[in-house]
Structure formats: C-alpha cells, structure tokens
Image (cartoon, one colour):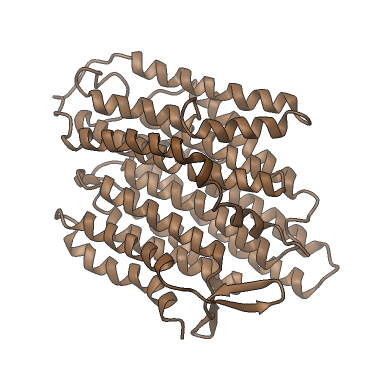
Length: 458
C-alpha cells in the first residue's frame, strides 16, 4: 500500500471540513496554507522508489487501487501537484486580509483535492469526472460578498460545457484505442478536446468570463480559478498525451494549439483597448500572457515544450501580485474601476497593479521577457510576422494599463485607507520578482523532465 500517496490525496479533504467553520477567523488562511505546503513537503521529502508499469512507463511508488480504479503518481504528476499546492498556499496567505475572500480556503482545498484525484486516476475517462467536478466547485469561490454573480454565472456555463466535452472526448479516445484504424473516433476526440480547451481557457469568443471574474468577483478567488484551470489543463493534456500517444501525432494537433495561443494573445490585446477597469485589463493581461505557453507547446519539440512550462511557471508571481492588488483596490474603493484610488492615496496598491501588469506582459527586465524573447527567436526563421506580433502585442495592453493610471473619476463613496498588509506584501512581491530574475537561468533546468514527458522516445 502506497501510504504517502494516500496522504497526498487525503490531506485536502481532511483539511477542508476543519477550515470551513474557521473561515471567518484569522486562523483559516494559515491552516489552509499549512495543509497545502504539507502536501508539497510530502511530495518531495518522502523517498518515492520508481515502479515500472511497462517498458516505457514508470511511477513513483506502486499504484494504489481504490474502489477498483488505479491511482498512480509519475514524475510529471509530482511537478503538477507541487505547482498547484505551492501556488495555492501563496494565494491562501494573500487572501488573509480580505473578508470577501474567505470562501476560498475550504473550497480551494476541496477543488484542489478533486483535481489531484482526477489527474492521478486511470482510466482517464473516470479522471475527467473528478477534473470536471473541481472546475464546477470553483464557482463557489467566485461569489464574493455582493459581487461576481454575472462573471461566476458565465464561468459556470463554460465549465459545465467544457466538462461535458472532456468526458465525451475521453469516451471517444477510449473507443479509438479499442478500434484502431478507424479515423472517426480520433477525429471526435480531437474536436471535443479543442472545444473543451476553448471553453476552459477563455479563448475568444468564449473569453468574457475571465475579465469579468477579475472585474466584479473576489479577485484572489478568480486568480485561484484561472490558475487551476490553465495550469491544470496543461498537465491534464500531458496526461492525455501519455495515455493516448497517438493524440499529439494527429496532423492538426500543433495547428490547433498554435491557433489557441494566437487567439488568446491577439484578441485579448485588441479587446483590452475598448475596456476600462483594473480588473478587466488584468483579466485580459492574464489571457494574453497565458497564450504564449500554448503557442510554445504547439511547436511539438522539446525546447518548445520546455519553454511552454517555463512560461507558465513565471506567471505565478505576477498573478499573485495582481490578485492581491485588485483585492486591496476593491477594499479601498469598493470597485476596480480606474481613477478611484490615486498614487498618493494607495502607493503600494497602484505600484503592485502596475508592476504585476508589466510582469504579466513580459516587459523587460521582468523574468517573463526571457521566455517571450526565446519564443520570438524560435518563430523568427519560419514565421517572421508572428514573431514580430509576439513582441508588439504586449504594447497594446501596456497602453491600456497606462490609460487606467491616468484616469480620474469622482468618488461616490468614502475611500477606505490602504490595507496595512499591502506594504509588507509589496516588499515581498518585488523581492520575489528580483529573486526570480536572478535565479531564472537555473530554475528552467528541473522543467526539462516535463518536456521529455510530453515526447515519447523509442
């Protein structure tokens, strides 16, 4: 019996009911963060002896059979769970000063636990049910006190339809494995996977729920949602590629991923020009920056997949800073509309909004610029226009950020003082960005194993 793996899966479900009655107290955030960090420590502190499943597949420790189904942990899964729970711990602590984020602690633990269960469960069709349940449960984290109804409703529709597409695609993929040589089943699976990704990633025209969540919902809950959905889809797709190796070899695989990445970057940059509000622009910035990872993944080479993983990793700190700044701005002004809080009234809040926005757009000298420049160099020989667009599109979002900074609006309610936690968080955030910049050459080395996991070598 693989006891450490059972603990990794059980801790979030044991911690959630303990945190729920304490969600209105100051103890909820550190308890939820402690449970998440405990899972990360367990994943790396426990020796996991490799166990071979086949000639080209192995797990960390023996698989666990639960209710007749196999649960197994691979090296890729360990990175996935570490990314999820490490980021979740930081978001739990970031939500500590804000009462309207208190639903995040128990629901975030439960949703993360369901997602981990789905990622490790085989067959993949059963795992799709747990992944979909996690996505649907996240809706409850988006309902801040008096905010977020429309954005949460749109997210619920996208999550529900995406859930249906994933489960049907899993059934079609299993039929393709049982009936080799029949092109119908791979085509159905491939089409449904593309539809599910459009809905879950917020690709145009199914994009509105992302900026709306940051504009009118609980911002840190929105950040947890997009992180779990986007990062979870990346690792979930890697599980599909390992389970069905014929899937990445389909002729249109790279073309669809490239189209998704280009749509996310191009449409978000253009649509942001017609919008106002720190939350809305923040949502579009997240979509545009995430598109780079999917564009890199479309290359299908080990350098491209490595770059895709790196582009996702460096987004965690900017997303964290943006979510905290939006929550602090909302607490001060009661909205995320621009011009309500000036630099003199909330210097650390406005500084965080600008800093995290520029980091999200990969402006130099932030670490994400290295990923964008590397992607530009990879695309330049074969796609020079796309490479130039990759460098130029962030400028449109940068203009939208500057326009928000210069806006001035009359206040219709008294302005609350800047949260004291904003000073400490701002210092910690800028320090983390500096450390990430200095450590960037070495942080990409461990991610090479993720790139190799996508590509099966004979």
